[in-house]
Length: 164
Image (cartoon, rainbow, N blue to C red; front, side, top):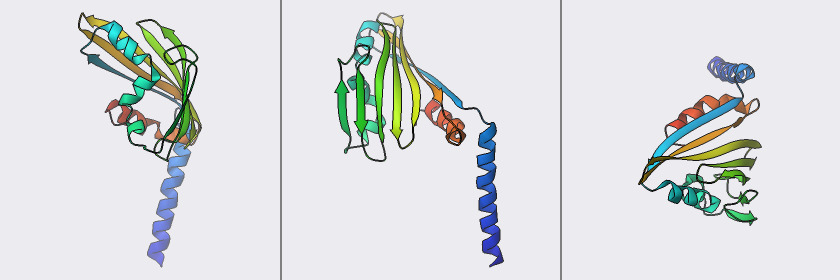
């Protein structure tokens, strides 16, 4: 019986330590990744500007066969909103194009409602690399409030390794 009490106290202590450390942890997250794509800048930009095309390389979309998608506006233009409702894997949320600088930058806002309420910025920038290659920079940033902020170091590490 003493062993069970000790194990429970250790578990409670670890959980308390994690929650208390979250009070002092940062709330902002920022991840930036770059990739070189073997296609001219104009071609890459014109593919990325459409949110429906972005879903072709989104692993969460591919993993959820129950996902229901809705669109408002014209894809590839400022103000277009792509929303979804899915299983626990992809949750519920929306992505809106908030700004476009032709052949340079697509800025979107992602608003998750489930499994948790979170809003973040997702930016894709294209840069001339050569006549047949384009550098694409992906930037994800936002704020995660307590106690969700305790996952920031883990999430940033996973995203930087390409697992997120």
